[in-house]
Image (cartoon, rainbow, N blue to C red):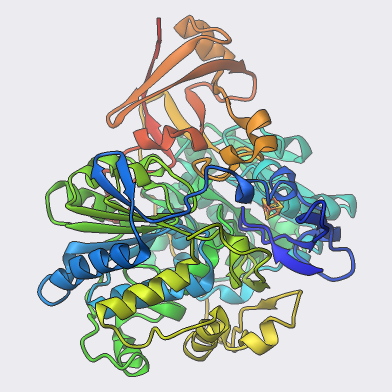
Length: 637
Ligand code: SF4
């Protein structure tokens, strides 16, 4: 029996795969070793993890567009030659006209090679689709020197106060939520901070509902209250920090957030009294234009209370792609460009650029101005997940899309490369507790499809780059373990023989935590649409909609509005409505719900509601606004 990792969310659950002639891909729960999913249980997505792999809709051969959306089959040789010759034409004089984008579900080995490929071509225009959520969180933790308080799942169970901020854990990370419930059964209190009533809030002893975008005011008020109490750990604030915090009395925070001052005081008391606390957070606070400030402030609060922290990530390798340097401003292992000489030597290339590249949002903007000539997109459906991406791809000369299924993004490609699924190659991924886990191939890819890393090796060689002569992913992991300090213990020999996985090698950091305060806040005119995820759907539905058991139950998910707003707008259950933002419109069927905060609207992420978010980039933070947007609502007659 082989032990594999679930290809969906960032929890990193493991399962045994049993092969029997009549049913070649049977799942058996892992109950004999310590895996991230307690007692080996899986959520509905995990239980259906093989269904998409055998779908008839798989991409199986390279395709070339003869006109938009119309493709003909071509050979691998022709596909590679055409892409290589396009890249070579930009490589010498204008590599920054190329943009490289990867999804957060590609393996560490493929992710590492993807950025190595881009950087050796001469550009740092490389980013991953988890950047504005998990990438922001990881950067905030590292900038705060707070990695030592990054929790493992076992530490959730040991906590007696668990704060879940901006995440519906019971729905989106059910197996991490099991750990929370275990702690609750031992007496832990659970505080949930989320504008919505959710499956998670049902288990909370307290539920605070700040209006979308105002969380930082709540954090500042909590920091203020902790500062007043002597038993909060003293940390070094600057005068300007103190000025910011000083403004945030519970009453002032109530005005901004809508959370009653008395509740804020109660929560502050709980935090102060907790012996062992932890804060878990998700995209509900990270994906705002002030997301970095919010997360740094959460970490400041956690450091004052001496709490553990755990950032949550939507994709199975959001952590790994960030570790591997699929970021425009960070090299593998979070080295900055001051360390570029390290990679010049390692990769034997003196020409590496030390200029920070474009991130996804900026590349989408630049493409529309004609400043990007090509996108190479590996395992990401940005035409649905990012606003304005469709326009950007249409204004670009050449689009390469490498994926396992046709998507709205591959529709806009010039060349489509058929990739292997996660189970059709060996490789490692890293979950949100930073556990690196090896997952072996359970079947060969269909027809001409190939693993991402193998495609990259062929392409790099065709382009004329050195250092891509890999025959096995283990060889790539070996290179990673020698160059990425956090993976120093995860050499292939050890990792492939350690089914429990290996937690990041941390070294010993004695750096003090750097505190940070801010009161930068986006402002929204109600109604505000927020996008949310469901247990049976994943990202843009590329895999889950090809999984019959998931599609049957979780395809048509409604737009939720509050009872107050429904009667104000004259809208009732099953009405078709159009949500219109500055960036477009999203149409869906309404369900009126008691769970929704008046002035807010909840729309399902996987159906493309994200497309109407604003890609306006905040000048000070450099981040777009990807979690919430003001919109209007109208009935579709
Ligand atoms: S919680 Fe996440 S990793 Fe675990 S089975 Fe479900 S989708 Fe897979």
